[in-house]
Length: 320
Length: 265
Ligand SMILES: Cc1cc2nc3c(=O)[nH]c(=O)nc-3n(C[C@H](O)[C@H](O)[C@H](O)COP(=O)(O)OP(=O)(O)OC[C@H]3O[C@@H](n4cnc5c(N)ncnc54)[C@H](O)[C@@H]3O)c2cc1C
Ligand SMILES: Nc1ncnc2c1ncn2[C@@H]1O[C@H](COP(=O)(O)O)[C@@H](O)[C@H]1O
Image (tube, rainbow over all chains, first blue to last red; front, top):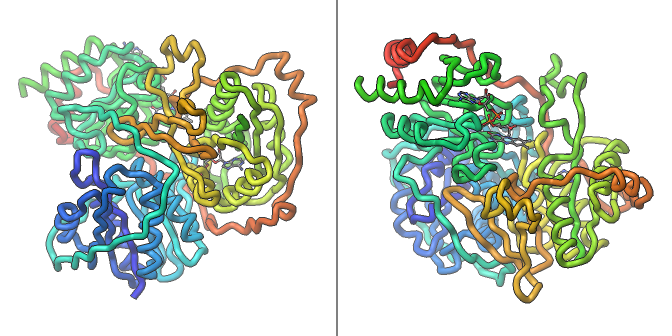
């Protein structure tokens, strides 16, 4: 039976990255369209915990590779292992979430498998050998329907387009695997984590984002976020200036988010920013320029000075 | 050191991109073309490294004759020579990486610096394919620890650094939840993120000098690469449109709408 192999991701804190569950749903959809079986691979220093967690999310088999080699993610150690597993299973589809790791790893896996690849897949069409991937181009101004004509096909999926795979149903078999290891030319040195007590940007149901209009003063953005239990986001201009960590950038080249509520304050709404938040359910824009393009995608626009209205909004929501 | 950088020709980031009514491509009217913004950052980083450690920057572009404009742009910024792989038709990332691998084999650079993604295809693949094809290490999404508006940036130090023995590159990578630092033995592939540097403007003397710098022309056939696309675009459609929203006069109305209409707070 053909196999769709999804690569799971461990966060630096040791937990499963939630986007893996969204990728599993995509994998499941693809498996249904192609009559394949869904498998998932997890590579870590000790993969047993994640393997146990993944067992209940709809895959048939969880492949778990535990090795000190996988303590810190490196494309050079992970790609050969994933490719070797894919080959031994005869997997025809290999995918994962389009996180920083997924985007770094899967093209290298594809190269090893002489496979063509689709990045940031939004959905699938067709069935069997005629599966077609919908994916964004030009910062999401175009959705292209692409076919990959190589025997093995590789993809990453945009997590916001697929619900998280639920638990329940049959438990997967956990199969350990021990990939061959080769000496590599890259060495992990360190990881500086941006720590925050707020929810993760890509997982939050409410995001409050600030742009250059804040002039670097994020106090009111953060205070409103805290009242709403929201994550904080930012435009590129704000990250470039070093006002907030780069990790908070929303957009074509930052994070793609789709919360139930996105509040953009002092953000003009360049297409590269819209590319990362247009999928939000409700969008609120606060900008003092009535012509700002952000108002074209906002459900509710407020033409005002953010320094005046953000405190008002916080107080009104606090006392609700 | 010798550094190979890439310069893809893409629609200007400010252009309004719309799908044509047939769904076969984008409306060409009113488009301006530029070097891919990430590639401009790659050229800049190459120039800074060479300014610090000596050597030369070779810029490569693959496409029809119009890509010579982007090569001239990189030469005007200060790149030393250019390689043009002449191919007018569709190209996918597999083909681009295979062609670049051939150019790398001929040029033997210590480092290949590419953009992390092209802003038309948005694939984010070529650098990683290239590293695997060459069997090199890869450091994607190269960034900087300090902000682009810092004094250090104004002092134009490269963000990609050499190790003490000069045999490896140390790269700060922009990843989820923070910054990861890796060291890659050279030769290696680096791909640039937005916050690696602010590219210089080409000076007038730079533009004049670029006119006499060499552009070497190659072809896929000459390089022995089959470029038949394996990523085949069947059609293009516009993204789902959002329904038009409203402007609210004040915070009280906004809160009321959020509570009672959108029901999100
Ligand atoms: C290749 C490429 C990739 C990019 N990727 C991204 C990306 O991923 N994400 C991203 O965000 N951008 C990205 N950009 C940058 C993008 O084009 C814009 O430059 C950027 O989004 C602008 O940020 P901004 O809206 O904060 O700033 P500006 O465009 O400067 O807008 C500031 C806004 O604040 C308003 N304002 C000012 N003062 C106040 C006040 N007191 N109260 C209320 N409003 C006020 C102004 O009216 C203005 O509309 C990218 C660009 C390129 C070329
Ligand atoms: N036609 C091309 N010519 C030169 N470089 C290219 C070309 N296409 C892609 N690249 C390089 O590959 C990077 C990643 O592109 P992509 O994988 O298409 O997003 C770009 O930033 C360029 O540096």
